[in-house]
Amino acid sequence: AQSVAQPEDQVNVAEGNPLTVKCTYSVSGNPYLFWYVQYPNRGLQFLLKYITGDNLVKGSYGFEAEFNKSQTSFHLKKPSALVSDSALYFCAVRADSNYQLIWGAGTKLIIKP
Amino acid sequence: SQTIHQWPATLVQPVGSPLSLECTVEGTSNPNLYWYRQAAGRGLQLLFYSVGIGQISSEVPQNLSASRPQDRQFILSSKKLLLSDSGFYLCAWSLPWTGAEAFFGQGTRLTVV
Image (cartoon, rainbow over the protein chains, first blue to last red):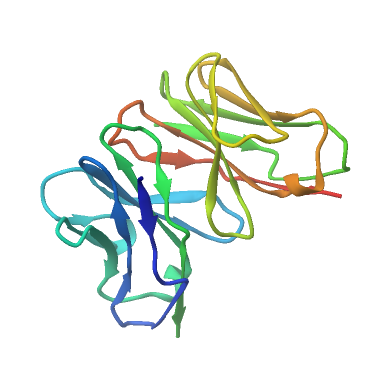
């Protein structure tokens, strides 16, 4: 069965420090991996995706993610956190044989000044 | 460019009343369309998806139904709302291939009283 795990319910980071939001997945076949951000009472915004190619993917707002096939992970990273990065982050995966997205439970990121 | 419109933004309805939420997409043809519900600001639950006009698949048996009367129009309905139907409803679209990211509307906050 396909699944996505975001093991941290909440991540706290000081402004200016690097941040990592973790995501691991389980799918049959090649995975397509996505990260989204959600601000309060708003829809989700697409940040970045991994389809194939370079394992390090760069996206919006200075975020990047690294695909690690052996560890079945796709962690979201940013070198220097901003207070405005505080939001809810979702990881999602789609197998190449299925167009439905499987979503993680979300990780609340709090950046403290 | 493509845009997605979802309305209304907020809605308060009495128990037993009907519901109609509408979502339209502009700037693309034959999109995949999705309705999600998000409870308590966290996980996303896929309610319905559609790959074409009149083609609706339901993921979860419930008090809701969906229709796609036009290529870029997706409607979520209920004949009689229940208290448990309260939540944040999100419409989304994607191109019809497995590597495509989904784009979300701004969401509708439904409160059933």
